[in-house]
Image (cartoon, rainbow, N blue to C red; front, side, top):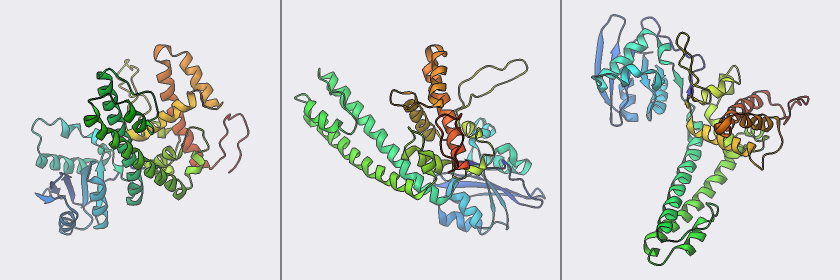
Length: 358
């Protein structure tokens, strides 16, 4: 999902505002008209149910919902039905989450009243397109396989270690072969199925890696981003699909905040404490950028101005200097990728050199 470029979706005069609290099986709604007349009820959370319900709404109604599992496809159905969809940022709805008498019916009413008062209070977000969401699903599926494989590898290592043996250091791709020879007697029946599953997961990850390479060809703008050593096809495709439209950010520096890599703030009067990064936005892309930052600062990273800046930051950062430097480099990398995407320029490892047009 992505933040609305304007941050507003104000209600039009005479427009019916409907709060829709999305549930897995049933969704509750609450409608408000300018005359104060209200109507409430529930609808099945399915395409057929939502479409039938939308056909009964007054034309051009504003439907307010909270971002969640179903909000992407429901918002598209709302727009297709001739209405307007407003998807609220969940972090802005503490009035709902901290309500002492919380219920689905009351949540729908609060969404309607907040949307009627001032939509900007909800900080509307805009979901990515259906095609981009489908392509991004391949990347998220790969992440799920990698996480599952890592968990199984840790399980096998721990059980083998508890029996007085060890599986030698190796890559995740080679683990199944190495572990099959290191399982101590008596544990074969229990651990061999896990080892076979790890090998199968590795094969499926290779298939999805090839799919990601195909997506990189499908989105030629990723080639600009991959000019930076440490940014591979996976990171570039995830970056392009997550942001989708670079023009939503008037300034490249806004991307760092969008991905939650800028410090959170809690300023009040004279008090303005230093806080950790907000970790808002897409956590998966943030992890990929942090991985790229580790490569840039690591032993195989080529000489660049970004690497030198990060190394200086790590040296004067104390005990946590390396961690802070990695996050700072990841934030600068997010900004730099956006700049390359928008400008189409050839990447210069040292910006003192004259920029070259693509």
